[in-house]
Length: 387
Image 1 (cartoon, rainbow, N blue to C red):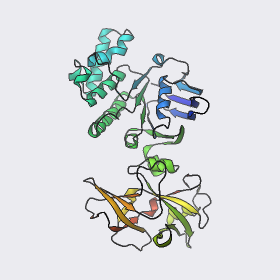
Image 2: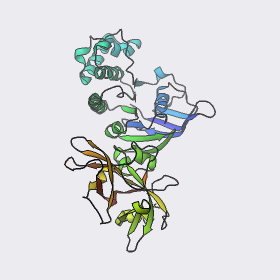
Image 3: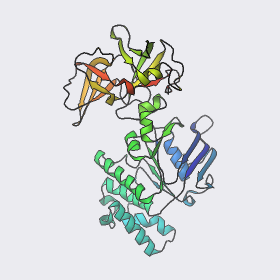
Image 4: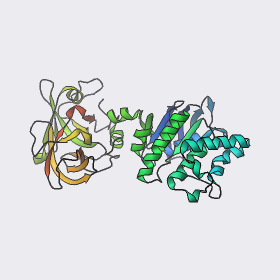
């Protein structure tokens, strides 16, 4: 077992093509760390540098106490699971799993024991005599996991291993990988573009964009306290709704945010901590002078249906575009004033997550109550959170 440390690591393809910029990251021993971000953000490149499949342009990479910049992949004591399984089609499942051990001249008895133990852990013992073409996608992925597991490496590297599976198998295999980590206690580094995988599997998550770490923390911390608009829009499904607003101070510790313009203008009243943050009274909130533009974020689950009209200072109204019925909930897409669409948002417009019994149809004008205690505030010029 070992920790992994990036110290001021850069990866460049040519002079003007930086992929990773000044990466400083410590992955703790026994930790399950997820690298997540959109395509092209550098997450797979970082993983391949750990594996030794990509050279480091600048900086140092440690596995344990050893600098591995110039160490060959086979000597790094890591095991990698690829997106496309990479199984040998002419070999049985047993031989695929045993191949790396045989290359190291491991005694046959030990090879058999390790393969049997891994197969039992992954539930693929009945398939050891089959060839990959005789297996389903989920079974092939478990064989790929087993091939890595038998090596008993210091670090497991997983590069989007679930992307070729259907939705049900993704959920099932996700749980199997989490159980595998708990059973082995090995350091896992997992790359995905799917933030649901990241939230459900990782001890910590590193959110990357354009080769830079935007935020590093536990799944709940990233969800509750996103550091900037990118993280706020990327973490959460559906993603956070954003609105361009103006701040209006009121007396007695209250404030208003004005959403939209002209006839569409609507207001939300802020009290308590939300008012303190918006008006600059909370620690670290910065200067938020009266009339200053802000970007406000609202999670879809922080809306509730409030009937046909509001008026209590905690509601905004709009027209329903689309309703998606998911059985246990409804996702309602609403045209609301002042909507803002950041780079990482999954959908345009605004989304409310409502209970299955609410009667909402496209074309309806609805009023949504907002839990203003859970608002997120961002500086439009820097995109950073005010807290």
